[in-house]
Amino acid sequence: MKKLLVLFSLFILQWTGTAQAAGGYAIELTPAENNLRDQQSLQRGAILFSNYCMACHSAKYMRYNRIARNLGWSDEEVVDKMAHGLNKVVDNVEKRMPDGIALKVLGADAPDLSLMGRLRGSDYVYTFLTGYYEDEKGNWNNHVLTGTAMPNVLEGIKRHSSEEDFQQVARDLTNFIEYIGEPSKVDRWDLAPKVIAFLLVLLLLTYLLKKEYWRDIKKH
Ligand code: HEC
Image (cartoon, rainbow, N blue to C red; front, side, top):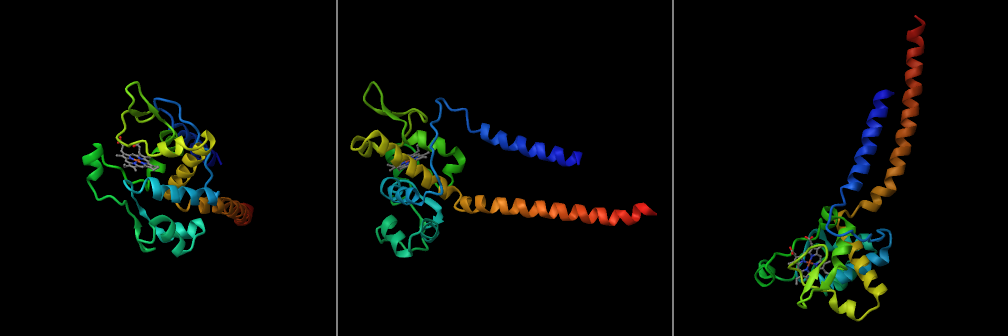
């Protein structure tokens, strides 16, 4: 029993530890408040991603048909909405610019975004996307990634929409980026309580079985 308690507290420590590890940036991150269960937000995020990010960024560990399955689109719809009919559903989500152009023009390669949500966390991605500002010289800079090579690609949307709508755009994009980082996260959340319930029942049964075995042994 003692060992079990130790194991359990280690588990809790580990858990709170990862939550704390998200801190440590120059500015406080704004909570993204995205919701992976909001399929409409994911759909909007996917279309925004295609229109505003895929020139430079790939999400090459995802295939279009997986996105379709998870976001409630048919195979034709996903190709139509995200690839303008130019890709096959079995294709990986590749960027549209050839390799090396971003490096040449912007001074840095645009990283693949498949795992960016897991690497940096959703709050970071959200704060990064909403964190562009004009410095004294009139150049774009970013609060989280100072001197970033990425242009302020959402500038047009920001200029032509309310603050609230712009935040929603950033939230939808962040939602999609978190989704591609772990496409089965929602399934995992749904499965977890069932697994825990099963293990608890199993614990009870094995405990009763142990008592049953030892009853005879102790008598002698
Ligand atoms: C014109 C090309 C271009 C477009 C379009 C673009 N990016 Fe980027 N992005 C870059 C480059 C270049 C970097 C590397 C920045 C750096 O290292 O300073 C980058 C970096 C990033 C990063 C990582 C930041 C970090 O901390 O390392 C994220 C997240 C990101 N982009 C998201 C997006 C999203 C979301 C969109 C669409 C709304 C988008 N990008 C559109 C070029 C682009």
